[in-house]
Length: 203
Image 1 (spheres, one colour):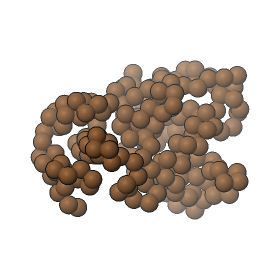
Image 2 (cartoon, one colour):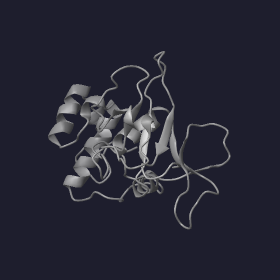
Image 3 (spheres, one colour):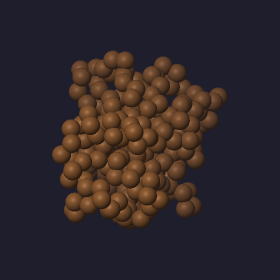
C-alpha cells in the first residue's frame, strides 16, 4: 500500500498510524466523524481518509474495490437513525431489548439483548466477529436478495457473499430490525443475532 491515501494528495496514512488514538479521535471528531469513542485505530485512519476524500469532492465509489460497499461505515446510522421499527407484529423480544442507535451506546450488562437499525453498529458487530454479509442461495425474489445472513467462516455451502450496500439496501427495504448480543452472560463474545420485521412474523 502506498503511503499516500488514495484520492487524498498530501494525506499520509503512515503518518496517521503513527499518531496516538486520542489524537486520531480528536481529528476525526473535527472532521465530523461520529462514534469515535468506540473506533479502533485502523477504523479512525480509514474514517479520516474517507472524510478527506469527501472534503476534496472525490467521495463515492472511486477507488473502491468491486463488491466493497460503502454502507455501514462510522457515522452511517441508516434511514431511521438507528431507531427501531415497530408495528403490529412487533415481538416481545424486541420490546424487551435495549435499543442501540450508535457506536457510542454500550450494553447495560453482559448478555443483554440488544436491537438496532444502525448500519454502523451492525457492520461493526459483524466485522469484529469476522462476519461477511451474505444471503442464502435459493431464497432470492426476482433480482432481490433473499434471506440475509452473515458468514462467520463456517461450513455452510448455502451462503453467497454480497456487498454491504446490497445487504443494507435489502435490510432497509424490508424494514427489518437487528436483534443481537455483544456478549453472553458469561462475558464471552456472542455471535447471536436475528432479523425481525414488525409487519410479519418471518424475516
